[in-house]
Image 1: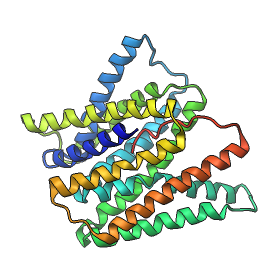
Image 2: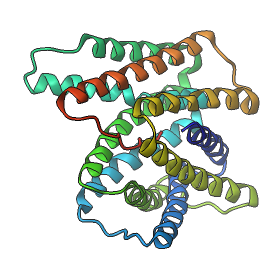
Image 3: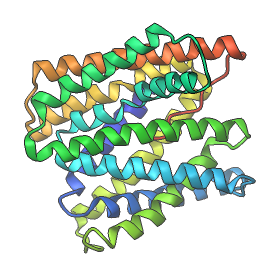
Length: 295
């Protein structure tokens, strides 16, 4: 999980650099292309089939997941790298909010006050992160980065549903990558079309796709063999890696208020994951959570 978090942060660096050459749609397209090729070869080598009995579920997961990915890539192009990653990693807090809302709609009379506190703490952290780091012209990127976290949480829930019907993670990632390839190709036509390549820009695209695919496989392995809550906690190391990259490579300033907000979001996310796990354990036997496919 630590290695996966590091690779996802490194991918974010490559996305930020590649955004100087390509639109977000193109980057999503090439990322999906690399993922499709790698996973198809891997499935063939393992003797696995990519045929699915639930194409509709994969389609919905791809729509939500690719939307989240596209918005995240767009936010990376206009925000400090750690800020963009922090907003996307709000998915655990959003999932806690979905759980609270679902309980209310279902007519539940009790709301877990601790879960509500974790949600409020997460939003307080967002306010601390955004205020000192986002300038007026970056507000749009910030809002879309926040929305990417909402959609990531929805994609996570869909991955959970796919796991319950017996779909292996490799097949889920393959169809997600295929969706990114198709959607990115369409989106790129509205964001400047396809651009010519240089050795540097092509290497960045290859790095984005390769790093994301390897990181996803590592994350899948971590969730298959480790403790879900420990994995969820270690995943937040990606924000720390992004801070180091931002300072060393892009000269981004470190604001103490923003740093405090990031720590608050991390604490809220870990608390929300822990409380969700406790709530689920009361309803059904403990089970290994599927990986959060996108950071």
